Image 1 (cartoon, helix red, strand yellow):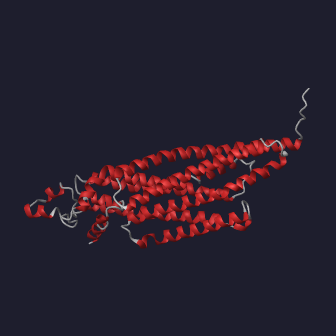
Image 2 (cartoon, rainbow, N blue to C red):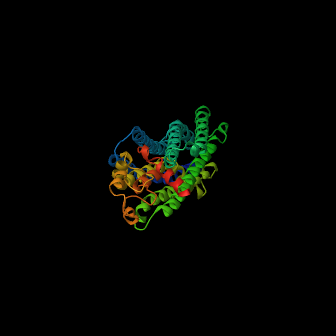
Image 3 (cartoon, rainbow, N blue to C red):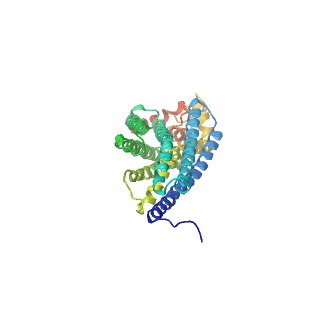
Length: 371
């Protein structure tokens, strides 16, 4: 006959609750593990793109540092998520010297000890990720500061409320009402930043499409497709990210553990730790790889060649040697009908930071088109 006494009804109820909670938490753990694996592939592609493109200025090193930091912070967040889950398993199921009804207090105390580093890493990833997106918009618009004023304001507001939430969390602890809605407001400003940036990139993509339709001549249309495609990818990825980021709204609701919606809550909570770094890394990969493979050699040589005039038909020495070139001969060259080098136009449209000399060429072509 066994000496073990059967569980009381109360203990059995708590044990069932702990098992249910841990099972639901596995959904978040699997989600974040899947996302961090995908993120690892993106990070590897980003490192490859930096290697292929090379480091031509301090901007490249800054961007490399940001991409590396975002990934390392995301991996640490994933590690903290695993550590928190394992601590919950230990506290709820393996602390035999503590009564079952009291074990959740111990689990909450251990979870609170990880909340500050999790909040700091999450906030830094969110802010730095939004900063990279704004930086890309600034480059696409030829470093026009007025364009990014509003996104910078929303980014600063997101940072301010995130800092308030972090300080409040440190002083009052997890679950305190003293922090108010600072976390929600910070998230809302971050979402607004990405929506504004996506709209700005969409406007540039639309303008680029209109310009290329006017500039292109027969037989040169295919040379414009790359830039338009990349701009479209940036717009579409921005829209997808904004939609995914908007799902974080579910975090503000007090969803019961007995509701089926808790699984959706777990998924969005896990995704919130990886998405802020994945999206800007994707932008870097798309722009770097496209620029490296298709444009780097020619656009770099054109941008550094002082003999090229972007408002003429061809090379100045060509005109001196062949002053009677026909229109069809000019159309076969690497220039469009306005005299803008096609590859330079493409590189400029995507705002390559290192090619300072190309930053005004698209604006010149726009002025010529409007004239």
